[in-house]
Length: 402
Image 1 (tube, rainbow, N blue to C red):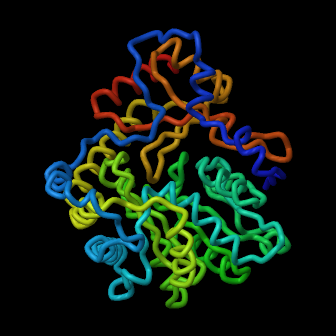
Image 2: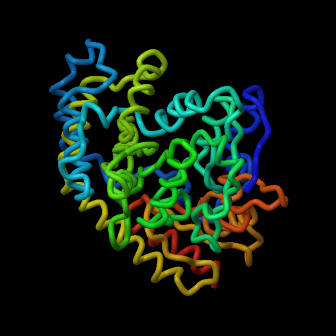
Image 3: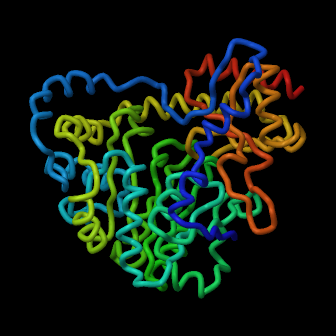
């Protein structure tokens, strides 16, 4: 566990894009082969064919202000998807009470923290997050004046935060706990038992559990458990629990900026008032296209097949090498490169020798109180290109590792 005592004035210094740092690291270094970029988690399986015509048919509606609470078409489509995806939610979701659209999940992950902190009173609250972490979590905590608390998520803890021994004085002042499942970058999945424990803590200490489920449709074997389904199973309630999701990864449309938050009705009511004056709304044509995408599964299933093929390729090409582990979900490899000098050294070696660009794991994590960075030994590799290009990149790495 690690805390960061800082202020909003220090935000620009603290929040340094991993990709900007990577550009600095590789500046002046020439790639050894024709470049293949495996750094950005940007799906490249193709935009579903329905998107273009549906947008074109709705262009006149760009001339209207969209409703902050979402159109009935959109929230009903999201509610129907939640009930299909998580059978335990069948007949439970009320779209108008349990769902709000977001202009991409990142916008919600950032802005929802202000409503969570407002529930905790005057003391400076803590915000828990995994380490490594998605940078929006840290930006939100610091911007809201909270104390970020990093929970190392390493191989010994199944690449998820250890929530068994968190001190009660910390939990008493916790406003929110960000948790991603499947995790970025490690691909770890929180099972029903883990989620139930996290939900119990949130209710016992009255903080918000922010479940980032943006990768929930990309998995190798069984579908990941869902936070809302577990929450309702535990006690028939969504109290203290909200999930964030997006079409970016599910439907290969990161540029559409379309997501949602769902769960705790009271929290969403408070957050809606905040969003109504402080946050961007989703244009009506985008809401229409989004409703169509949430209602269509064939493109999701086809994309999942492609990811499984790339997972299989990665295991076949790299599985014999030290530091390789299979991800359970998401579309990243999280490879231990201690034997190549750690994250930055390995990244430079791969670029100079292979022309393959990867992301140093150290850039996705915070140094802990013992001076350790839990991402220091790792690189993150995004399996987002087509199978042929992905295989070529992995085989280049394998030749070097051999």
